[in-house]
Length: 440
Image (cartoon, rainbow, N blue to C red; front, side, top):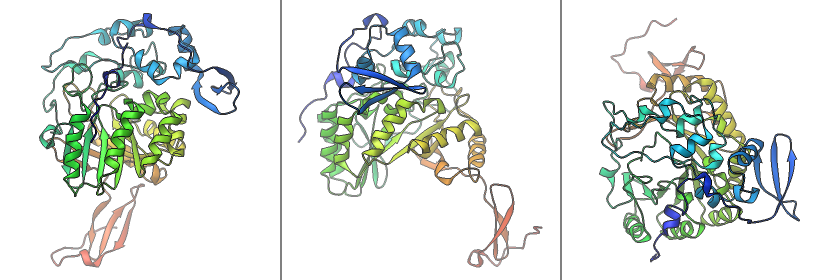
């Protein structure tokens, strides 16, 4: 029985009021630096083992905006969490905020999703361009306070499929286990904005998680547990291992999954100690939320490489977002980059109709156009499944470009990626009432 309560530090680490004036230098380990090409590689003193790769852009950003922080600080994930940018005043010291970004008119009845950006991820943001894709995903604008028809605070009705707090059981053989309401960086299109951050209603303890685990134990049909939140990788190694070991002992649970954006927004969290711990709980899979090619940094590559080397299969779950990644060219660049760092493109999600998301949502035809532009034009490993998570709790529904265009007696008529029609002999599918098609 797990009795220990999750510490407040792990749900909301101390000192996260987001001040640039809170910087304190603390030496964690002594580093020396060598530079290779366009990236800085840091080695532990007296060793040839690389500790963590860092881009030159991150180096310049640290020296400009966090001058009291040394390399060890910057590469310490807890330092990154303590020094997140958490209010618009501090963000205004780093970015040239537009009038639209300063706007705070709240026309929705729900609480505002908090602002939080790790220093690392802030180093990737264009200071002067409000339309930069990465900037749009994490900086609030006035449009997110406008409620549009069809939007809801819980459009997927996860709460309706929650037999015990913190657990969603929608599909027959798998459950979603929500273990924290805390994220390192808050995406402005977050499906669970009702639960996460300061304004969210969700907080977890090991006693609450024990009730969810007891439900899993009593449900032999459950073979797959997806651990999410918030972001489970913001928990300490000890608390995460407690959870994994508890689930791993359930005989009918065949494998575990972790859903996270940490390798993208806080890659320093993927430490050798973490990967050593994770590899004890195979079969363990990980779904990572990548959004744009600009997130494919040396740091993200290092984090994903450590996870892949630990034998963890990695998949990417990307949300289709207007003005961020809604073009074939951008998506192809992202998918190719993911394969290079050993992450398999898994899902492309249509943006969920949460409150204040209209400015992020594209027409469904745009997603079909993107999949059509990928399929056949690049390796099949690089083509994710385009899905709509159906409002009302219907689950993920795949959306495909039209490939079956008709039938001519015993032949099925198929259209390939070039738009050409091909015949496949399929006599078993023909019915007596069918008339032959006049196809040249």
